[in-house]
Length: 189
Image (cartoon, rainbow, N blue to C red):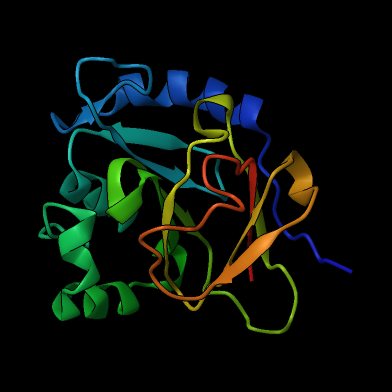
């Protein structure tokens, strides 16, 4: 049995993306549907459903951390081995917890989606948080980075449906053939 604490419908996210990204004052932010950059780095707050997209990984992490981490590495690949960056993530306040980052390409490349939530995962054997990917992210994930004590479970259907793959407990530069470019929902446990 799976406890599902949070679910954010993809259509709500899409509507919020269009409404909120236009109002972001940072020069770093770009609209969610921008096509001028080959990769965009988006941040989603699971509690509010708000999403913003940025031209750089550094900008996305700054937004995801509420401005507390303004000097993140320029790429997710560099962040993997950066001990100072990982320590910064662990020091974030509970309402600024980054729970996972998801990438469209292997080796943490391409566009990214960083999801933050209200607290670290509890490690109690249950899915603490759930997220259904919006259409623009369905069937695109190829590598993942778990944060905040969360293990990541990937599912091929919305609502944590179908066979799952995981848990991904550590940085995974390639999630493997079972869920590569097949993920439609994510469980955080």
